Length: 364
Image (tube, rainbow, N blue to C red; front, side, top):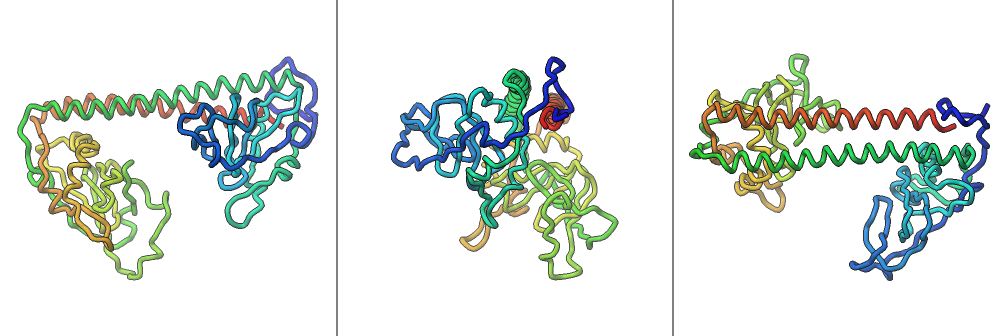
């Protein structure tokens, strides 16, 4: 029978094999330049979401939208009046079909397979309408749409919870460090640059550096083919070193080495953290926006060179370093919050995995 693997038990009928043209009509967006207003009440939508406002609308009924050019694999759904630009297509849904169900049906299609361009990804209305789909009764469509909408709402709330926790952590870090009652101490008394090198080999894994930490080089685009010399020296970094990219501090590329012994590009800087400081305290202190903005006053460069903060200038900066016991208390408080965020992120991953599994099994 033409039915999904997973189904609400009250439904028994087979799905009907159709094409999207049997359930909807794809329509084109229009240039927004003549209607765009900052004080508008209706959204102007592009392939990435809302890009402006207007007092006019192209369509005022529930609709599934999909990119004509550019982002073609991220369907959108609107229930309120809207305007779409010419790179975003929208749909008129035929009765008795449920628009929200067709939105989830669209999510289950690999639209990249229907890309009609060798350059910028493109879809045409005729291509979309010719794609096959399997459609259940109106009642079953409604049940599926309502169920998945509840799951989407839960995912949205979970994402918002994580966002709020991260904002709270950002605020808490600034409060903890701005209210310290202690003298400032030069980073040169806390840090010492590590200048040990190694050729690429089996002894140390090759890693890269980002604002999110250190991770295997293989996880990102590997630029080793650009290295002309076979005996290039890589810099060695060890667990609990403080590392940063001199030219990318403006993007927050500074972190504690919580990965372990490794090698990375010699353009990166790695510091030994002396025993007077808790390494995690230093991590929290230097990853704040206030610190990064302040240390960037040492940036030097030209039109032809990227602005960078040298390790010598970095060590000239002073920070507040209280007694180790106070450092440990701050670390314990912020680490507890980090663990909470990590747990909530894990829950979000599981919710998304749940939805992915349901999407694979609730549609034909």
